[in-house]
Image (cartoon, rainbow, N blue to C red):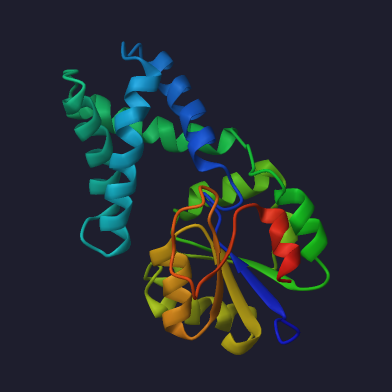
Length: 227
């Protein structure tokens, strides 16, 4: 890939271990507010619901508030745990507040960023919220690697919308033919980039079956085989 000069990474589920950090944040939030539910059981239902709500949010079918409220409300409903809307809003705000305090990265993150840094210009494209994503990157110490950070709030659209990729490339001052996107979400990151006309690599940590034409890695260090 000698034509590639710029690499665009997703953040959550790609470099920053969202599920592990999210579990730790919820452990703190539930304990602080004396919510008597088993954390493992809570997460068993919350995690897939969160993914469902994010997919709706990604395609502009719900608002940010509906995302943050609905994923918690539905989880507590399944658990038959009575909780007020006021408390749900409080839990949601505390969760967002505490989430960037936990900073587990995927195995190989720092090693691969060290390897790529200097050989390529590195960037972030994320659908996450600006205030939260900035804290995650700074607290985990990876912000120093990236020349630009594009989030859906500044772009006005979310991945897989082609306009967020166009926005990011303009910000980075690079052409799509010299760029590649790396991310965990087949819909938002990979197909979003490919449909825009930009190359992509799928970070397929769980080794799910994907179409043969899509480049993939199961561990971040495997990017050395491509870049």
